[in-house]
Amino acid sequence: MAHANDRLFDHELARQVKLKKTRALVDKRMELKDAVAEYVEDGDSIIETGFAYVRGPMAANWEIGRQKKKDLVGIHTPGGLTTIFHEEGGLKGSHVAYVGVEMRGLVAPFRRGVEAGTLEVYAEWSHGALAASLRAAEQGLNYVATKSMLGSDMLKDNQYVKVGEDPWTGEPVCLVPAMYPDVAIFHVHHADMYGNSRIWGLSVNDTAIAAAARKVVVTCERIVDTDDIRANSPQVIIPWYCVDAVCEVPYGAWPGDMPGLYYFDRRLQERVIRVDWKTPESTKAWVEEYIYGTANHYEMMELAAHEEGMNTIEYVKQLEQFATSAAYYNIGTMGTGADRDWKYEEVAKRAI
Amino acid sequence: MSDEVVYTPRELLACVAARLLNDGESVFVGTGLPLVGALLAHKLHAPQMMAIYEGGSIGPEPKVLPWSVADPLTFYKAPVILSMSSVFGHSRAGFADVGFLGGAQIDMYGNMNATCIGPYDSPQVRLTGSGGANDIASLCDRLIFMGLHLPERFPEKCDYITSPGYLDGPGAREKAGLVGGGPWRVISHLGLMGFDDETRRMKLLSYHPGVTPEIIQQCTGFELLVDDNVSETPKPTEDELFTLRNLVDPNQCFCF
Image 1 (cartoon, helix red, strand yellow):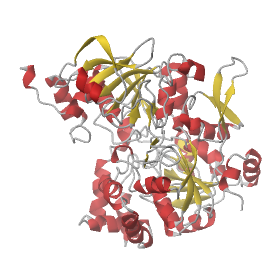
Image 2 (image 1 turned 90 degrees about the vertical axis):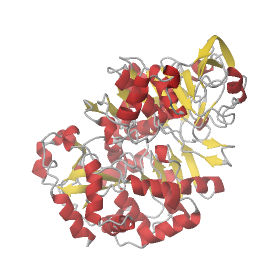
Image 3 (image 1 turned 90 degrees about the horizontal axis):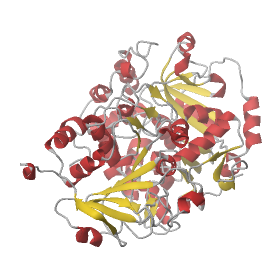
Image 4 (image 1 turned 180 degrees about the vertical axis):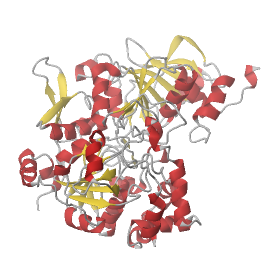
């Protein structure tokens, strides 16, 4: 089978896939389990979305681990929490713009894999160059000429970019081809059943990625009526015709942040980064307990809560209290998202 | 009186960083210590500072310290939130005055490393990779770097150039096609450095209270030039420390 990297910059293949996508308004709702089973195939390239641990599709990432998908090619821009699966055979190699958790530290499984040579790094990217690459795909451009990456050692460790000459000015430019990942999974605040996806806060690269990727799954905090989406279209960052599946997954960004709804689960994040993932043995034990040992995202949350001696509802309420009022995320009173009473019950229902 | 002010090395770093930022400027804020310095400046003397974050937020109202460059606190009451490609595009276009970065290594020409310690193909430590650091260093008009001052963190030559400084000396940045003016200041827990206009080499501008230029040289992996007017860095003021401890980093995420 062809390597995912052979498809990654294939303009024509990407176009053919999109010509076949339906334009019709069809109900794309699925269970997360089924969407991951159907749309994430062994050997696929999978790009991280949102800002990794801010509005990242964490429930979907854990589900990919749970289903033991093999030999994926990660595109980390930023991200890399998914690199924990490489020791389980889940990740073959990576395109790296950033793998880490900022001030929490490095992701130890990634570090181990690269240092031992078991995790291949296919290319080094800067955030700006990779963002431009995805934007090129969205804008229908074969490549873009940027001023990022010039003079750096990354040029030697990225076979996909080239230094060229601006035909007008003669100055050096870094030529970055349009990138088309096999699969992208997004987590958003609201989506309708057709896939129109609305957020509060940062879109990061998501609009570009949705147009670039061959297969697109949206997970959302809540599925809303399409009339509600149509009344507030400026907040929509992903249009329906890009989307293959829509899954309602409340708390889908946990243990990351979901703007306006719940803050980073700092306790869990600090613990996994600083302690649980430090060695291959402890990582394996964590994966066995938290991923393979749970049937779904809500069992995983319940486990985290119980380890802190709390019940799940109290645990979740605490995370919600940290999240600043939704009024500050440019939503005001628009839309139905400001109504936040439903969530405790929602989790309670799914946690049981 | 001011001699009695008690502060930690990180608090001093944050205060020195904040003093370098002017009101009315735009600052592209990298993760780590730069988050603290920028926010402190914003609250002290630069209420019109325009913060840019790679997550896409521009011009938020300052609150407490964000935990990430995409933390919701980075877009608290932001009038506009763009995409990642837009904020880097804006930087190249000329909307970013100061880039503000941390990193693992910086060398005598101000090149920065966030990729690996040791050879790339068999690293002793694999680091995070560029993130936005390369873009911030390539595209902003001038650059401030913050980091701990140890010989291995200030080597003659970085193990890997993730973010370009002056590369291998005068004229190299221009030849490579880079647009920004390059490294301007380096803040460490020992001193404040700049760069010599002719040689593009790092130069000591001020040493922090309690250390000397000789000590700083011993902690540097290359010959550090010393400015003719080198002096002691002013200590943090009570106002700076109050703001830092109570309004910027009350939970001691960073400054401990």
